[in-house]
Every structure is written in structure tokens, then in C-alpha cells.
Length: 144
Image 1 (cartoon, rainbow, N blue to C red):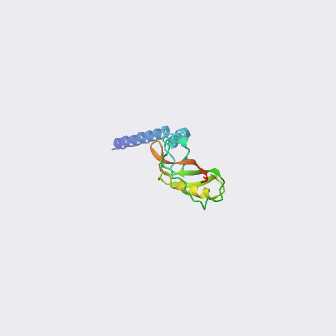
Image 2 (cartoon, rainbow, N blue to C red; image 1 turned 60 degrees about the vertical axis):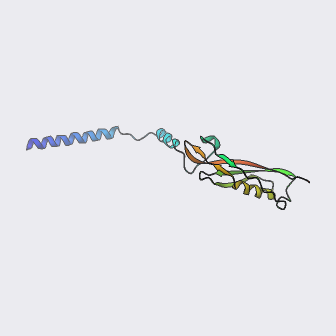
Image 3 (cartoon, rainbow, N blue to C red; image 1 turned 120 degrees about the vertical axis):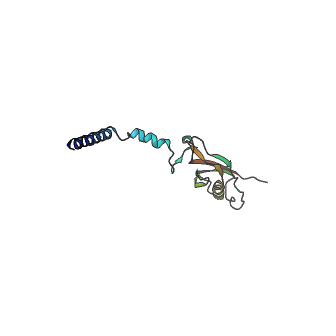
């Protein structure tokens, strides 16, 4: 019986020393590996620039600005409006901002038109992501 207890206790010692040596060899992942792993998956909340995605968003339809003589009455003869927006991964246009306007009713009409853009979202590594887009709407008043 004494011999049996010693063998069991030796087995316990060997098993526990193996466990310690396995734990000594296990190291946490280096910061560069963690960074690579995080870069391989697109960030769900990030909005990407067009050069950062693997497939850019595809515009299916870009509505024209609805002409409204009353709203554009105070507009200059011609000009353009620059609008920045987010083409969200859900397929909706979000965060529409006027970057450069004409300070007349055409600014509002162009902003409204940009909200109606239809598109296929961008992709990064096969996953849908949101992408920034800047567009320009030109205006020219025609005399009859």
C-alpha cells in the first residue's frame, strides 16, 4: 500500500510539472500579431475612404436636382455645389454635409437629391462597409 501511494504521488508531481512547463511555454500574442488580426477584419463602425476598400461602392442611380424656379430665383447664373456623405453599409445615404454651396435654394435641392442616391455598398475583404463619397451638382440657369 505504501508503494501504491508513492507511485500516485510521483504521478501527481510529474503531471503538475508538465502543466507548469506547458504554461511557461505559452506566451501572449505579440502586439504586431494582434494588430494584423484586427486589420484583417473590417471595423464595423468605421467609414472608409474609397482607396481603403477592396470594392468601391457602385452608384446605381444619382437623381438629378429637381428644378424649382422659386427656390433658385436668387441663385447666380451658374455654379456648383459640393456635398460629402456616407454611403452606409446598410444601403442608405447618411451624414449628408454641404461642403461648398452657392448660398441659395439650389444648396437645399442638391442636398435632398443626394439623399436619394441608390447604390451597392462598398466591400472590404468580402464584408460590406460604409464609404465616404463627395459629389458635385452643377447649376446653370437657362434663359428662354
